[in-house]
Length: 188
Picture: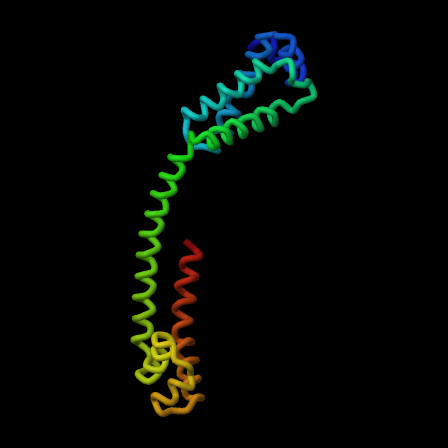
């Protein structure tokens, strides 16, 4: 345990401003883990997080005379780390790897979504196949061929109210299994 461990951050900042390297060492030992974890949460790269910590602490030593004793040191370090990360992004340090990671993620999510959509379409097609013949025919004319209820009635030589009834029945029969499926997905 160092003799400086009894001092508050504000007292250490005062000593640091006077060039006390033991105060600097205590500040480093007290806060480097927090700073590293904050940097790592932001960029998920250990080497870059160590570089950010080193950069922040080097900057603190070089600018020790400007740091005010009333400063919330932990907040100050966190803010300095955010600026270091922003500078790395601005200077292109992360730009390529971020875009590569996003591209890989996008391809994977597209493949997963494509498979899920295909399975959902197959499920809906099965449900439609289970509809009574006339109901299925009316529903497919409405949904696949995008015909109005009036156009379906004319094509099948039935009344518009009958078309409305078939569509309502089809939607009712589809809604229950699709609601159950949605409930299952929401629980996962």
